[in-house]
Image: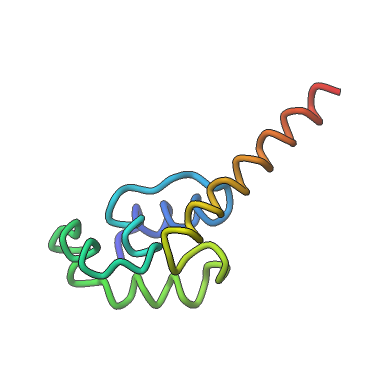
Amino acid sequence: MKITVRDALERYARDGVPTGSFCRAVLENNLVEAFAKADQENMATLHGIVGYVYNNLPGNCWGSKEKVAAWLEKKAGERDAAKEEGKG
């Protein structure tokens, strides 16, 4: 797996940073879209990327469009709350 893919997945899981379209398709469990968006290297390592998501990312941050959207919203709320705490 490319380091850029791993880093994007880590930033997404840790901080709620939106990913590119390929990683988003993987996170949403959208196989057709993942294949459509994959470059040659991502295509060749797709099995490993999916395994990485399954084994390393919280289960509630991937698996469907709804889970991904909820995770991004949750993380945005956490960032907003942290900003508010910093003002006080």
